[in-house]
Length: 245
Length: 129
Length: 118
Image (tube, each protein chain N blue to C red):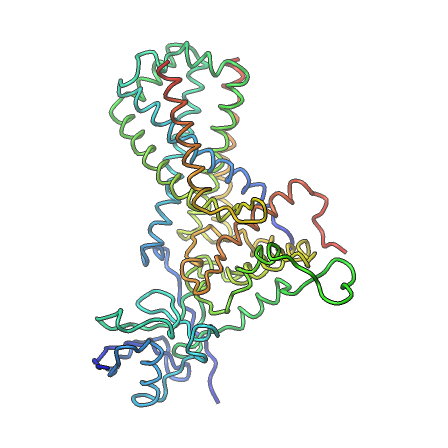
């Protein structure tokens, strides 16, 4: 396995000393099979221990290592350095506040997830034993359940950057996952939030959220389906505007 | 202890120039300008029709003028780009299921193209016959 | 948070966008070819167009096609202006009112013209 020197530029930000982020470069000896995360780990272990970033599984299931790589939101553990012969510029995910170096503020995202009530709200009492669901019923919502909360979609969505209150792709896709679940009857209650001004209506179907999603969730599709569903609701059931009891 | 002073990167008005996908999005959105202007001109055309043959001739002469033709070419290009993007996005807005299985997105898109082609053919036949 | 009234704007936008995608290319092709003289000279003659639009069904279709496209364009333009930086509350409201106001005015003129043609 051969090695080559790769130029890695990282956008640094230290709140205790910096007024604004600045670029810092490192020359990293990289193996052929390395991903961006391997280079970051090398920098932290051997070159600069002060570099801060999130990571965990190193296999694209935990969603921790999302960063901007040459201006595109990607998972660090899934982006191969051999695809970047001229080196990489790594920045924290766009549209989110920077806490330190590559670590972004995720508190707002947690609030948005909670706001869409991402849990089953069944009709009536639970069945004796388990719920039953056909493969077709599962197929309706399964794709929207695959989200790993990596926030690449928030970095890709310009409306997230332009409107700080916007719920965003992942939160709305999660709401849709529950709306489509045959066991759930909570669509009206979720619509209080998803059909509000900060919900689906901020979306203009740029579609980049779905383009960058590592799990093919297609949040853009989810949001358009919700726009259609709640528009038809609005027109066909105008009395059903308040919270249902 | 760490200082918490989150840095918010401002989004400039030219954010859409930063990635090719954003540029394509903005071009798609801007098709509404020629399309809206064309719709307005059609309204003017119908007002001319209501006024009588001479006003109508004035309208069709405008269509046949050099700027009129140039504008129609622009509208045609805008309508085509709008249609292509709209048809690609349609299956994601309205996923269809037949007999418990998903209809492939490509079929929905092709179905839209088919309808558009039939409409165009019908209009041209009406113009010729 | 309360439910937004956006559906009232989004449904015409979606309808107009579908109309614009399915019908507009053929329609502009028709007028362009006629304007270039590539169709029979009377393709867009007063008599022929009046015969179509003067019939109540033709008028209804014409109204549906043109009106939905007007509202589609108005809504898209309003959202695009917001994308381009018009986000302060006062200018947002002015932009919205201008876009939808123009569409409303054009729709009224359209209806008046079609009624007069009958």
